[in-house]
Length: 243
Ligand code: MN
Image 1 (spheres, rainbow, N blue to C red):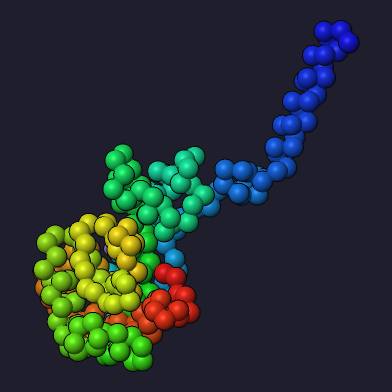
Image 2 (cartoon, rainbow, N blue to C red; image 1 turned 45 degrees about the horizontal axis):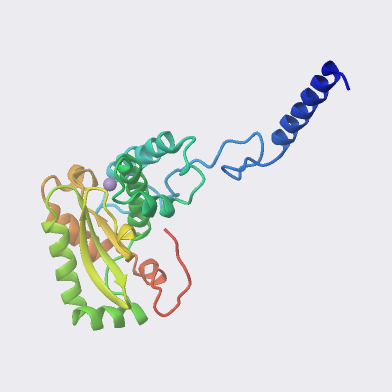
């Protein structure tokens, strides 16, 4: 075989490989050929924007869901483009970037996207009141009474200094109230979040101005979707409800 023929054979081999790559799924993202990798976005609201009135106005939901929540997704998409995170599930990105130097922006936007998905699903029109069944039993066992839980949850939400979140989490078969600052999330700390309230000012300022305490009371008394919260319990193995 002369050199020219060898060159032509090598060229056609490369052409064949290139063609094969074109029809094979992208191994980095698992995406079908010719399609973009998965794009992160806020999960659909389980109600209309005015469904939570008068406790949370349509205007607040419009800005909070449509601008803030959407903004975290858009920023995350920018940050993970063509990185090892692009093909991972959101929760996995949160876990893998927590406390990793140089990955703060990815963590902040991924965690904020995840936290807001849980926040919206933990509310419904005509919510509030008390849970029943296993969740109420666990609340009673963990806090002494439902009223004691409410007091602790409201206290955490009101006392979180600056931006953050107050949570009901499941950990080691028991329930706890915890609060986190900024984007921080129990997902990064091995806890299973059951319910969350967003206490960043953007969550309540249009409706309550500086009265965070009134927003927290409205959330507990009129908005909590306890059936959704109960569905997130892992003990005993309950049906899985992902935010
Ligand atoms: Mn928010």
